[in-house]
Amino acid sequence: MSLYRVFIDGQAGTTGLQIRQRLALHPHIEVVTIAHQLRRDNQARRELMAAVDVTVLCLPDDAARESAQLAEDAGCRVLDASSAHRTKPGWVFGLPELAPGQRETIASARQVANPGCYATGGISLLRPLISQGLLPDDAVYCINAISGYTGGGNKLVEQYAEGGPAYSAYALDFSHKHIPEIQTWSQLSARPVFQPAVGNFDQGMLVFIPVVHAAGHSRDLHTALQQWYEAETFVKVQAFNEIEPTTAPMLTPHGTNGSNNIELFVLANPAYSDRTLLIARLDNLGKGASGAAVQNLNIMLGLPESLCTNLPVA
Ligand SMILES: NC(=O)C1=CN([C@@H]2O[C@H](COP(=O)(O)OP(=O)(O)OC[C@H]3O[C@@H](n4cnc5c(N)ncnc54)[C@H](OP(=O)(O)O)[C@@H]3O)[C@@H](O)[C@H]2O)C=CC1
Ligand SMILES: CC(=O)N[C@@H](CCC(=O)OP(=O)(O)O)C(=O)O
Image (cartoon, rainbow, N blue to C red; front, side, top):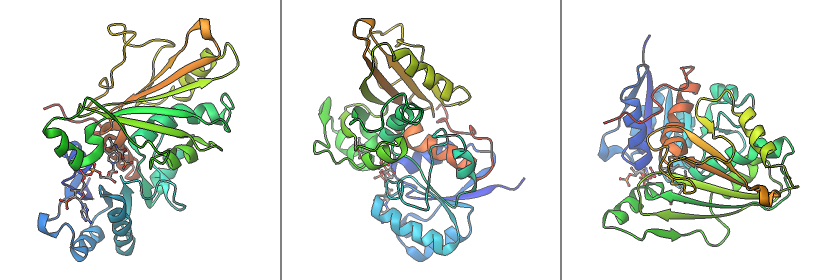
């Protein structure tokens, strides 16, 4: 079987590098690289795009919009890791676990938008519960999260190389760029509140969604998530009310690093049975970016979905 060819536009960035590390061992994909000095040369990029099966965009949003147009002109399929096209008509949202049929839609798409890291956590928790009517779609959900600093790309990585604050809250103005994709793909009629923070660690993320509901329904939420993700390889719904027995009642963001897994927690207290804490844990560079990108590439190319989605162990 001949190898599929993939070009990563933004190959030297945080996300691009981790996709390359994963694809280095891929038995069916060859990564075609561009000379560093030509990385912003449109003609050189278009020529490469015309010669590959898929172009992966690991660029800032404006550059991704421009590069997506180059790829379209070159007749090349695109997987975009930026937030430029995640709610754009004509693009397919690259979360295979979103709903029945989503993988098939990704498999045949010409333009796929890889989800944002926080959004992957938020949507994975909310979509099954909203779409099945277990939570209302018109409530204003308040989502908090913390991410490792690699989520901010090369700039934030450089900043933290010298050390940085243990915890910094940001996006304090209700306008984080992941809100539209969380609202659209969770099927919320009301705009959610999303307030993230970055910590002084490289990778890993927690996304928290406290929800209030009729008394006694916490277990129903858990059962619904368990059933929704039963057949999924990368989504693990933890036992009801269970954090790691070794660290409970504490939860760290680090349990999935290097993998393409996302873990979902449903926590409740019988003394306060009208509320439940939903939590997602993932690697911002794994299921939150590069692992998910490789999963989507496999689906787009008709390959086994799990191939090389984890970071190879050094
Ligand atoms: N880091 C993360 O956890 C996640 C990131 N993403 C998204 O993925 C995309 C890439 O992010 P990330 O890897 O973190 O960013 P980085 O800043 O680490 O890397 C961006 C790369 O793009 C290159 N680049 C910038 N502008 C251009 C341009 N006009 N033409 C060609 N190359 C260009 C840069 O090269 P140079 O500056 O040397 O020219 C750099 O190699 C972003 O849209 C980001 O939002 C998505 C999910 C998670
Ligand atoms: C810590 C940090 O800065 N994180 C990034 C999100 C990382 C991510 O998912 O990126 P994209 O949506 O751009 O793909 C942020 O909040 O903008």
